[in-house]
Amino acid sequence: MFKGLGGLGDMAGMMKKAQEMQTKMAELQDSLATMTVVGESGAGLVKATATAKGVLTGLDIDPTIFNPDEKEVVEDLILAAIKDAQSKAQERSESEMSRLTESLGLPKDMNLPF
Image 1 (spheres, rainbow, N blue to C red):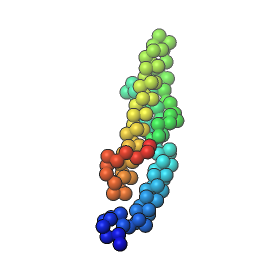
Image 2 (image 1 turned 120 degrees about the horizontal axis):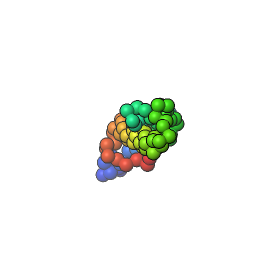
Image 3 (image 1 turned 135 degrees about the vertical axis):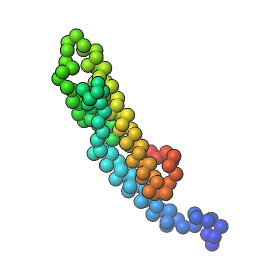
Image 4 (image 1 turned 180 degrees about the vertical axis):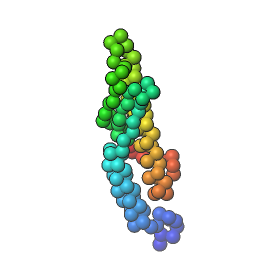
């Protein structure tokens, strides 16, 4: 009866695969919230810590950079460290998503909703 539908004839299998993907996506979302990355600037004088979801969770500033005459330099270093952390968070998130899609047998370039 479903012979002409090829792989679509196994609806139960497709539903199981979709449910498995949904479960793994939820697990990955939880995992990304606890993974951390560290961005830095000024050869490590300023470090920003963020989750792999891009939420800034910490900022470490070496006290040697606090010179009132160089306020703009310090501000630039802080922004650079935060941007580095956010960039690393994005890369980590994409890497984890790629691993998930590959483990489910999906194409690497498949755009999933996050």
